[in-house]
Each structure stands twice: as C-alpha cells, then as structure tokens.
Image (cartoon, rainbow, N blue to C red; front, side):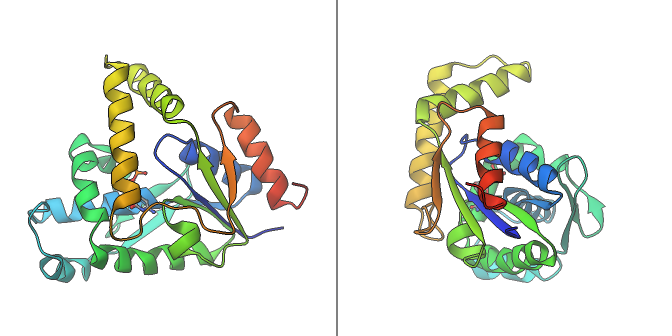
Amino acid sequence: MKQHIAIDGPAGAGKSTVARLLAERLGYLYLDTGALYRAVTLYLLEHRVPLKTAREEEVSPFLRSVDIDVVSENGMRVFLNGKDVSLDIRNPEIDVAVSYVARMQVVRDFLRKVQRKIALSRPSVVEGRDIGTVILPEADLKIFLTARAEIRAKRRWREIRLRGKNIDYKLVLRNVLERDTLDSERRCAPLRKAEDAVLLDTSSLTVEEVVAKIYALVVGRG
Ligand code: DC
C-alpha cells in the first residue's frame, strides 16, 4: 500500500472531491493545503496587514504567532491558534486575498514545514498545486488531475448555481482561464506536473471513476 499520495492540478479539475473521497476510502488523513493558505490569510487580515502592498519582511513576524492544525472530520477541519476556522476561511474576502498571500515566498516556506509535518504524521492524501514538486517530492504516488477549461468552468458554474447565485457561464470560463495563467506563470511554485506524476484527464470521467482509478494505483492494481 502506498502511504503518501500527492494530488495536484488546476482549479476545477475535481481535486478536492476526489482527494476527500479517496482519503475516506483508504482511511487516510485528507489534507487540503489550499485551506492552510486561507487560514494564514485570515490571520493576516485579522491583524490588518495590507496584503496587496505588504513586503515579505513585514509579513514574516506575524507568521511566528501562527499555529495551524487540522482534524479529519467531515473532510477536514482547520484550527488557527486553537480556534476552528473551517467556515471563516471560505468567506469571499478570503477568496480574493488568498492569491496575494500564496505568492509570498515567506508564506510558502512557512507552510511547507506545516504541510510536511501534518502529511508525514500518518498515511495521507495531500491535495494542492505544488505537492508532488515541492512539498512532498518523496510521495509514493503523484497524480496530476486536469480537465478541459470548458469542463472545469462548467463544473464551477454549476457549483455556484447550486449555492443559489446566478452567474454568466462565459464569466466563469474567463476566470478559470485567468487563474490558469496566473497559477502557471507565477514566480514561486508555479503549477506544473511533476515528472513522475500520473496525468489523469477527468473531462469525461465521473468522480467515482476517478477515485476508482487512483485507488487501484494506491493498492497496486493500476
Ligand atoms: O484550492 P484553494 O482555492 O482553496 O486555494 C487557495 C489559494 O491557495 C489559491 O490561490 C491557490 C493557492 N494554493 C497554492 O498556491 N498552493 C497550494 N498547495 C494550495 C493552494
């Protein structure tokens, strides 16, 4: 059995759903690393750090008083200095601010240690953008999930509609394409497939089919 599974890929490829279901099926820890970037963002906003203009050396001292932990329960719950912030980190203001935080090298270095400590504490499925390349290069199995941009936008559009909001599909597609460019062109830890990662295009697969394929690879039947 493979113990540490890394799942990377662009927004909307189905990473979170797939990683959570796979971890449940295996009885492994599920680590959603985007949630950790969101928790740091919440802390910095609470301390009134001007994220758009702050220099890395101004942000660095704040990180010394950030303690993050996670618990497997309904997927994953995140604790920031002992407080459950799982819901707060999904606020729209975090959605906007988190990309400024995720591109700071001091934050990435800090969270690399946090991610490794949590991920290596027990068998785990770790999901993010740079897990196979930077965070857990020694992972036993690396998966790079993708799907055509139109499909990812359609999934995202449906999700937003399910939450009761009306939004133009073309706008969602434009956002997906923009985020793809930002994610793959940013200086620190750009999104790219690790050389030894298995590429899985989920465009015409159901969630169950994707989970089954990865499960087979974990138990050595893929
Ligand atoms: O997956 P998400 O939307 O919760 O991610 C939040 C932000 O963090 C997003 O801007 C991408 C970034 N991120 C990252 O840079 N590296 C990761 N391993 C996970 C997320």
